Image 1 (cartoon, helix red, strand yellow):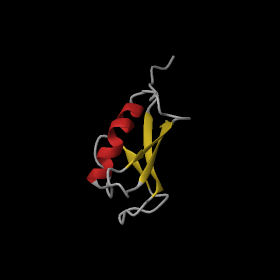
Image 2 (tube, helix red, strand yellow):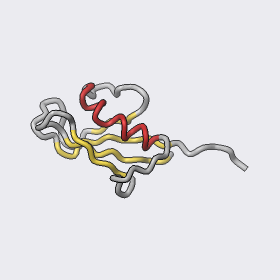
Image 3 (cartoon, one colour):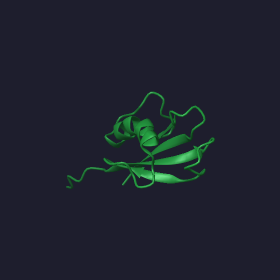
Length: 87
């Protein structure tokens, strides 16, 4: 019998870059405990709350099929999709 716990990782993907000059549609980052290389702090702060909750097994009320949409705080910024993947 195995006591191995299922690990969950969260991938943040740009669905729509908006007018953001830093990202392109389709770019993705694995969200962990630290800001991923190449991700700006504003974007990280926009996704981290939901991403960390998802990593630890939460099912968010606005989650659909293991995915959550969130937007950068810039009014014309990127639209992010967070996806939970079990390893």
